[in-house]
Length: 169
Image 1 (cartoon, one colour):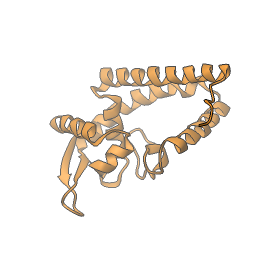
Image 2: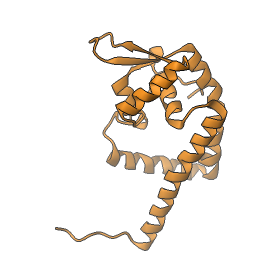
Image 3: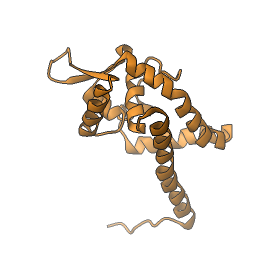
């Protein structure tokens, strides 16, 4: 058994900062989206993923992987979004066994209305705090971390994201 490779003081300080960002950033994003759009950040992510797909639809299992959520959590959310008229479920055409989530016109309109405030907050909290060089470094760092955490296709940053979103990405 190899000895434990304890974090250095510098690494420990950086790790504490990462933990703080992982706690504070989602809370800020959720708060803004709930206030302004009656959506959680998870719900916004689901609508955004659907908006980026031709036909604005995805298999539920694929969508769960893309938004880093369990199929159970996604199913509960989709049920709530269905009741609001923002998503509908359909049987998968290819095998008839699976379900497909489809973003409705009303859901797309709601996402389009929510996107400017969300993007403004992301810009304010993340990108405006960094220099262009730091933004490039952050991109490289997050890509390296995602390589360790996810297999290709498991997260939005590593998948082919065709189409365009309500916020113009």
